[in-house]
Amino acid sequence: MKNEMTLAFDSISENEAFARVAVAAFVTQLNPTLEEVADIRTAVSEAVTNAIIHGYPSEVHTIVVRARLQEDLVEIQVNDEGVGIPDVKRAMEPLYTTRPDLERSGLGFMFMEAFMDEIRVESAPGLGTTIHMKKRVGRGEQHQEGS
Amino acid sequence: MGILEKRGGRLIVHLPRELDHHYTEEVRRRVDAALRTEAIWELEFDFSGTAFMDSAGIGLLLGRARMMRALEGRMFVSHMNEQIRRILALSGIEQHIRLEKEEYDEK
Image (cartoon, rainbow over all chains, first blue to last red; front, side, top):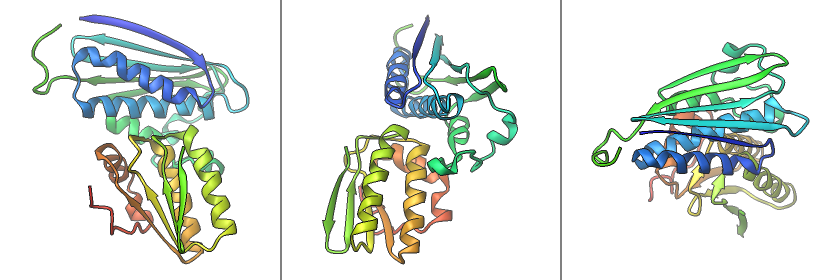
């Protein structure tokens, strides 16, 4: 089975819950385990929160989330056209944060890496950031019928 | 929304259903106001009603643990579900702060 969806929404914190719940609901078509759904929900929450706080620090703009399902593969992209990340490698180091004033723990990328099979960050200062994530789901005992 | 409950010198924070960046802000504001104005020696974060937490929740816990250390008080967490236990374990938070475990292992 193949299926795609796109969500575009304002970069306000109320939409963090909306984005992760919408993506999780979309992914259920692949019969994921509860743990896989929880993993995806957390990873999406981290990526969208980063876009809201760091991508658009002072203004409200649009965040675009795309999800694509193919066989047992979930691909998710979270895109902002905000300030971008000057040093991606550094930003991905555990506990590194540019916003300790907001009590950011510096664990967002670590969680995305831990909960997804693959993550790639595309970013350029002034142009924005796109987080690409992949995960295979539904290979457990729940995966029999359908598709 | 989280509800604060005071029992003697203990403040129990009944956390909201989802503890992300959006919801941590109000919890932080209310807990910090209570810590500033009331005599609190023990701070408990009760996850009974909480289904979801991400790294914003870790930031909240770390920040409050720091405050409780400054007050020479104690902090602990209770009644976490499986998703929240995984997040706590993965965060390594236990290496950085002392979490009282008396209710940690109870379901």
